[in-house]
Length: 338
Image (cartoon, rainbow, N blue to C red):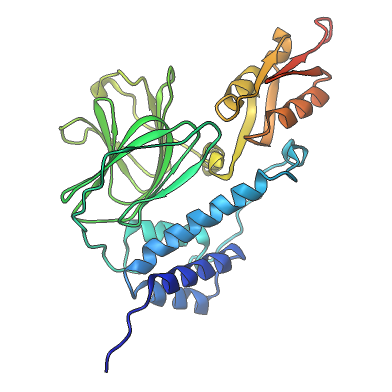
């Protein structure tokens, strides 16, 4: 008797259903056992779960940035606390972390030995793009980001030319994964992490799930980044001179990665800095005429594509005037005002 092989479409549909169930809350013990059993079957299912989660995230971002989006809803909102989870039950985050580790719940990934062309993948102004690699790993590219993918028989690597990218790595014992930077490379075997390389700013590496290693090109690893840590350094600095990575709280990790949902989060940054951050996502520029106003602290969650809505909220909060002149939004107030 011949057993018909499960189709990729069927696997994707089942993965989407599991992600939807995980979004509704922690799974029961019985559901967790069922998910465990499902993931332990066809090795394609693990990559399908990662893709389904990433597509769901993009769908949420599209709704957030739609024409009905009201930035005032987020001007003073606080992020919702994560629900308390029993250790024996799956949540969406814990399940994805386990998939990233290549643990016992999923079959090992076989190295494909396929070399992808090294053409640049680039996002435009305000664009956030999900790219699924041939092994099921994914990279989410933030606005104005460019990368080159090099997949070979012995290693997988992505060269970050400029911008910001979030990587979700499927474990492959035969081929480590590298992110190439000028004179340095980040090594990962599994998990999730963010790398940012913006002009005129330090390189910023954030280890979300799983450990990272940083080394000079063609040398053994010299620096370890444990899970939940962050490292920033000038791009031209020698690796021997880099400071040790710093631990980062989970709520700050979430704030650093909120761009994946099409938003920008502030927690006390000066208004001038917030205006510069919006310039990464939109041709509309925010110009602040009053120096005291430029130093006012800003907090809240805003749509990255709506600098005008942000400016209106700021003007109301700080009793400022707002004027739109073409692609520029001018914020000002009388210098005599505090």
